[in-house]
Length: 58
Image 1 (tube, one colour):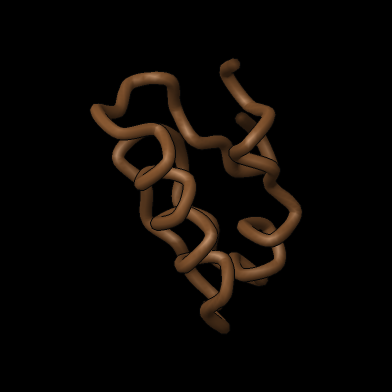
Image 2 (image 1 turned 120 degrees about the vertical axis):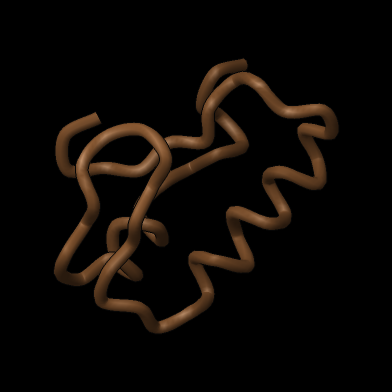
């Protein structure tokens, strides 16, 4: 999704996927390369922290 990060619906362990997403969001990163969509090339940490994987794709 343009300008934001979302945790996709396809994962084996939803709780573990959310925990991993939150761990990534705690890192200070500038760039984020994802398997689907365009890379985030600036302020990637802020984009991750703005995401709410607990409520996406429920």
